[in-house]
Length: 190
Length: 190
DNA sequence: CGGTAGCTATACCGGTATGTATACTGAGCG
DNA sequence: CGCTCAGTATACATACCGGTATAGCTACCG
Image 1 (cartoon, rainbow over the protein chains, first blue to last red):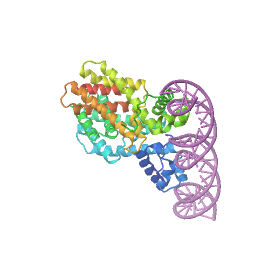
Image 2: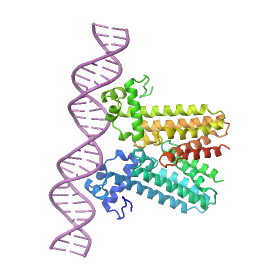
Image 3: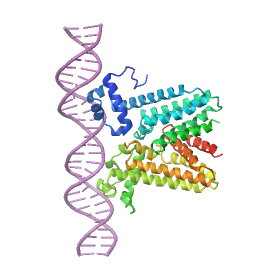
Image 4: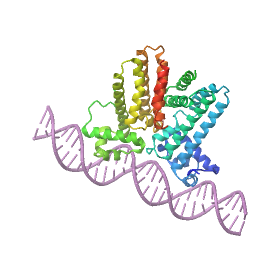
């Protein structure tokens, strides 16, 4: 379906490349990491990298996709641990905090990637917008589940708090940003 | 005082370079713009660029500084137009909306710059953190002025809303993000 | 009058970027 | 047996990066 769809499971070398690329791209920024370094760090030749992924752009998209998958899995795990619908909403903010503290505090990989890609029509921007739309959809679901009227506008507020917490935690060096967002969300839910 | 202090007013060519660099850096990202392009676009030789600014890093810092100055001036103008302390707080959110709509919708230049610089100790990161701290300080002032108790924690919430609105407007393509943040702030102020 | 500041013009340096070409090895498999 | 696929190894093409060097021009200013 999608042009970049990659059904087949990655080969061992491909996996190593993607893991290394994900770590380096996130930690240093996309433009600051060359394909040669990725290949070397993965213990692989450049040819293998290009055989598996075709281009740097495709590798970047694979990076964004897999990191987002990890995040969603982590989030779902946290959501499953909470029973009360209201608690499930609040749990998302606790999840950001823990995620940022353990998975690198350089903020949102999507936002960072967009910063390096000028063209708003580029797949990177579309991927990022999709991810935010997905997250907003999740908040709509949770708000509906919790029985709030106008779950859409509640979701708008929650996602603004969500993204603001990520930025203030990383760029603003505000260690309690996710707590602040959580407390504010708690207030909105009353 | 500061290592990058530049007391002397810029020469005409220097001004042109800075203006061009600011536009290009913001629109395309720092790493995507070379010094050669900046020089050409400003109608200046590379030598002039390096005579005025010394290095790309210094030019980047000058860009961040001047863009922030423009933003602060714009914000102060909007604040001066509101009388009621509570309205002054809300006016900051209207200001972001108008700023983003007229000054490029690629989000926060500071956040974007940080995305391209790995080292958290780099001047770019310090500049960004300072800017967020300044903004938080402004919210503390406004909250104090409006007579709220615990203006510090109110400011925390307001700045999280603020930054979240910027991200959701640009990356999330949520045109009403600043309105959502404003309405949420309004709710917090009651 | 002489020096300095601001500027143009051009050429160059070493390094690094994405991506390609060629030739080879080894394992799985119909 | 022979084909395909994953992978290694090395070399290369082409382009651009930040930054420097050299030389000369103009205008102001003590």
